[in-house]
Image (cartoon, one colour):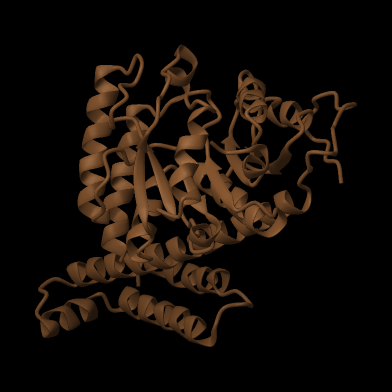
Length: 122
Length: 232
């Protein structure tokens, strides 16, 4: 086993641990653990990925890893995007609610305002 | 002719972002015509909120900047929940619309001929000082929006519109940015709201040109129109 192999094998579990958060669903935790195991196996036995790649008709093992990587990236990209859209909707709702709650009506003139534009009148 | 009582039942909704220089004049113009006004300061960095707070209007403030679509939706919800107005007009804060036109834009709703009225700058009255590039761009945007939202209008990106309470109850803008214009058209089509277009005069002052949508913004709108269609 080469030095690089040992380093990567030692690092991988830490990355996995770092990725797993308490609020993760069980399925995503299992997924991360599986990824770490697959990672370690393919570091120890690089020919294994080539073997699987040939079995599924992709050719080289690196191609297989590349395809999986692209697939995973797209999946992550999509779920992040959805999360951001959700967050944005929430932020909009909160901001809107605050604006409506603190709305100043025509009879409440803000005369002593020194245009610091922070002052709400209730 | 609308009487004073009718005019009070019209709520003019003005979304404003960094319009401190001109917002007071715009509001004064609308108030002097006898209408109720709600200005939504969309998290401006300048003294827009300070200025609108001094006016005898409904003044609302987004604590962060969300975009014109979001500001309009805030105005819609406020108008529906907190006022007893029956007619709602959206009006630009940069002084390019004329308060005298409000009457003609509300009229079809008053006469129960429409639920939504859209102002058009390409219907009869020629816009003042419209740059040639802007005219071309607006025509292209209109053509594309017509294709996508399947609704026959001559001017899709005009901020001057009127809604009945019934129509506004069915509108919920989810796009926070400028693409709300095409979103409104899609909703009109989907909910089968009755609409008409009326000519309105747009004044292209130096100020409004400076503030208007630059071409890059236009590209964003086009992108949104297409992307939105893909999502459906």
